[in-house]
Image (cartoon, rainbow, N blue to C red; front, side, top):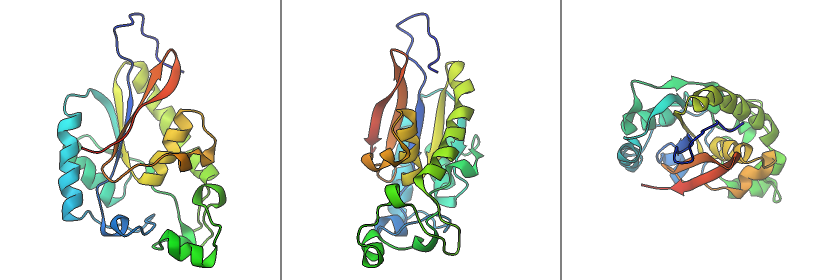
Length: 206
């Protein structure tokens, strides 16, 4: 439910999403779930560039994936002293596809689509878009009481899980994240208009 603001001039609060900066694996298109890779030098530079964009925001809650690449991005953006972590913001569990690129997966399954098919078990169980939807709905439920106070919420995580969260915000089905793209260090703003959840901004890269 959208927070109630009696005066139209009051801007509704937003959920701000930040994808982590570049890693060696993201740069080469490798699916990175539980593997805890760090940022590249370019990834750190772009993570720092996020800071000035968000410096004036009044965040009542700052949540991050517990993976090093996400936490480091939050730290470099200036939120290191405020980060709370949650496994609900961890990236998709890619199961047997961890570390593989999409072309490599297509050599095994030419018609594979993450959002439709999910990932088979490997070293980890693998996950479907439907299972990830459950996680991101919990994140949004945690954010709602903060939004109700008029404060913004910052979520720092990974490309696919944040796309799943964006889809959930605007009421798309679990596979709707396939229609959204979020670059490394990309920023999105989820907001409200006339009581409806909307995408105010998507994939802005500082």
